[in-house]
Image (cartoon, rainbow, N blue to C red):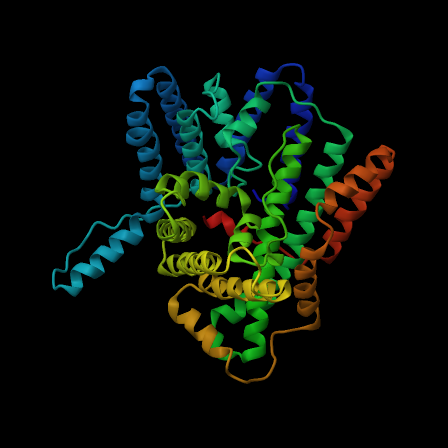
Length: 466
């Protein structure tokens, strides 16, 4: 059940009106939201609702034991909390990849074996809710958040349908306090939420879908059939597509949560205007990049042991971040590229200090094109296809795929990054005095406009596979 579909619209309207009818009964409200979230998740595969429940019970129990037995808290955290969460993630996401690699390695040494290769279905959003669980038990261990007062709150933390399958990864310290009190919906919150939903619908169903179907997918499927202009256009189009696709999901998740009275953190902040790779990761998928920083880079030692250790730790963090995105060597290479560039940046700052050695516009253009190089690895299914894309950039040929509409969408998708910061919030603030009927007409007109110009069908969000 995808966000931009009629089925989800009917589901959400039912959830919205039922939830606010329970406004004075916060316990029943949370229970209803939990059941609705399980129903939402079951639309992909009802069997994995049990995995979601088991994961929540695991993390609730570990957090309680950490609080009750402080002398054993590290053993409970590492030996059970982190270990079991990673085993769940590793089994479903990486079992097949590692068995295949082990088989190939044994074959190279002449020790061919028929290793047990199971056909494992990947649960939607497993990376997100396992990371959610790890952050909760770690924060309880660190004393940054108290253990939840009830199992219901932990289950809702990990299962809440707006962010369940593709983030943002909302910290327990942000969401659990909101669950403990009955939420309130202000006109500014409602307006902001509705505007984010319409904006997200436009980015996903108009820009991302159009570029995906009519430019990106055909060129990445067979790069050898196209010339340099089409291939360059497909790379730029994919940069816009993945931004519009994923930021659209985050926008809609934040907007849906706001309409239910809850606040999610911002997940994107105009990433393509970043002038360094470090700045890019402060702006791109902020909930994941901050998770990698706080729960991987810092435990590895961060920058506490000097420049060399800092470089090693950031490189390891980015490589593992690449592996988080998928069990493939192309994702590892993508993470290594991002980590390697950050190492170069750190070494440059050690030599030249914090002063900018490049004009800002050069830094933005250089960073953007390094990111685009990484997107080739990210999108291509094999190294051979990625290499074919790079080779095609030097091959002249007729322009087949790039159309005026695609060019406008690419330019518009990039121009979004130079809109006034927090423009949606500003519009919501200006509309707070508008009559409800006026606001309703504006939102309705926006939805009808999106429906009129979008292509047929709705492709799954890119990050559902992670």
